[in-house]
Length: 190
Image 1 (cartoon, rainbow, N blue to C red):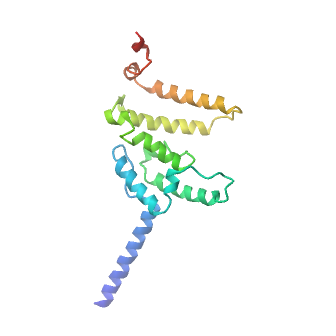
Image 2: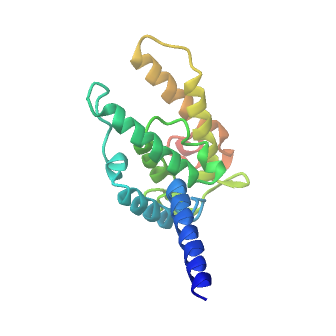
Image 3: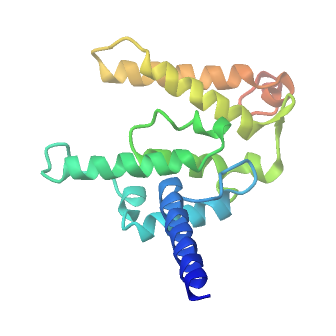
């Protein structure tokens, strides 16, 4: 009987270690979807804090000349992997090409935090999708587009170009009904 108990304990211990390692690799067991941001964010924040990496979510990166930069970058890539693994695939594309986990985290906060996102509070629809779903797809396309842009020597021109492109692409995708309700629209001026 003691052999069986010992064997069961070893097997249970082994499973607990494997489960623990798997959870560390995944980051969290909850994946962010359109409806669970607050729970997901709290679970992910706790997990990152337990890894002693909360500063990656809250503070800008050190300068690339800082002697700690390479170590910081390695940790940030690891945290980015954990974050991407905790997102549903359709959400993943809207942040995948951002340079740091802080950028990813801040973008997800803007997109999903009900307190800061009026379209989530009122569930505004764009065609057959809610505006945040439309925005997710739009944001992912803009990030991909930025990766493939030609170099422009004047940063101000590039920034203006990107801003104009982003705004016009987003607005052109909205339904005419929704566009007419926006401040500054032609129907409002009449």
